[in-house]
Length: 477
Image 1 (spheres, rainbow, N blue to C red):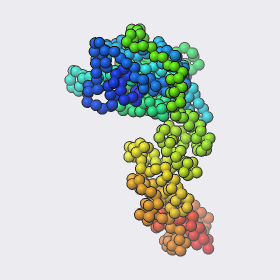
Image 2: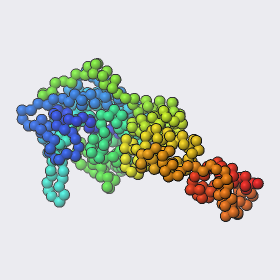
Image 3: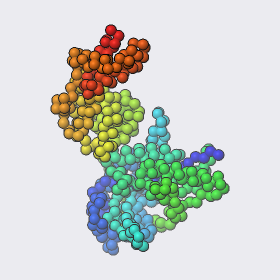
Image 4: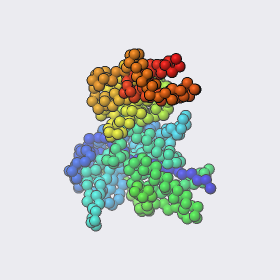
């Protein structure tokens, strides 16, 4: 039987404010345990929360960027549950009157294929603390630094039908949040977290199956792997005549399996009621307009513009646009050098390779767009060859020096002197007489071998066209 998955994702994004959602405590990551707390975020008696205005602006920007409706009034509620990392024994969140609803996010599935995934809601809430389980001891420690850190939860509709679609959705959402600079999306530090609800049904059916929620996924690839496993697990259960339990499951990345954690709670278990210490949030048209005016060009719009203006392939554009800083760098280069495809080739193959190797980000590199453009012009003028350019690029990456300075320092100028090249060509021809005979007998592909030998003798400095012409002239007389 042919089954399809039905997936909904709940993404928690930590807003990049300097202070917490309802107090002035710092949100800086990595501080000494329990050093960034106060009576408000510890829930001590007699204190009152005050909403962080910057957090509200950031949340609105995210909601507007994913095409949500913004009701004029939204409200905070108390979500009650007892757990050691929640000192108040409730979390201030939003329930039946969220900040935003009825949005959508468009994702690319293949060339010219766009799928629209509905966004059910975006709501604001405070984060809980962090439990640290002691090894070899029957006890745990708790760090309350994270309590009260501002979050938005972005809840998709159950309209994702594969692990690949889920991955593309998450990558697109991450890119938007980074473009807006409302979240640094650092999954290792917990600033972006994802839970997935997944069920299966026979393809063509409308009725939803019993869903399981998967937690503890620390990377987008981890989400993809967890979904692939869970979909297979549920299909196997159904085909064996068993029922899928509605439960929360944990992803074990080491064993690449999901494990049952607990039965799934419903909203009634949390006993939501309106937060009495906070006024309703009123979003005026003026505030929405202010947020919209401060928003940058978003990834999808930039993707379409660069495809049209620069004429580079969809693959190149997609890689460049996903990182705002990389896209900014690319566009600066295009302003200085009018061959967009040449620039995208070098950025994707050479620059991203060095960044990955050195575990660096684009804003850490020493090569400026102007220097990269100057290097391309040296190639066009014949001062350096394409092969030498790759060596030069690494030297520029390491030193930050101008390309022409390094060319002179390292003696990298291309050899264009005809007599010098002819001398090397004659030497190579004498050493490879059989190859010469093969070429004369019609095996023209063997010419590439001789070109390679000349380039090796000149340490890659000889002009390839002059080398090619000289070889043909001497071989064919």
